[in-house]
Length: 171
Figure (tube, helix red, strand yellow):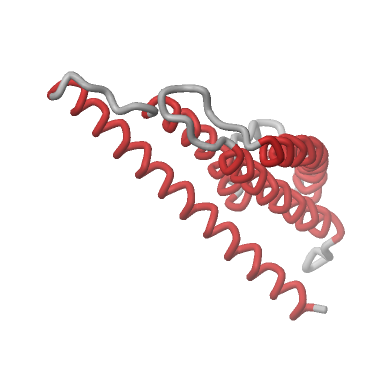
């Protein structure tokens, strides 16, 4: 059973690294689009058509891929003033409750994003603006990023539950 768990963990780690890479590339693209748009607007007095729409789509994707990365690394915001005073088992119980609530919300949210992405794909939804590019790839990317965050949250929930029942050394 241990090799299966390690293999699954390796796959999840690879998926999370892909999400991190996607977030980095989106950040780079946003920086380039913004810089070029500002330069062309100030120098040539001509804005890039669709730069605002592309930036909005990129920012949405960046937030969700960032959520996936934060879910993997556990670098999300925590208020731990009270929890730090608990034993390790108490901290794991509190973490399990938090991860359970988060996982349930993420599962619901992921399901809704799946429906939105599927509908967007079926109608060939495009952005309304100067540059009309398809919106469904953005919605699909957001769905995938949230699915990664959901899986990572469930992974953390399982680890936290395992921590509750872990035998303490010396006990």
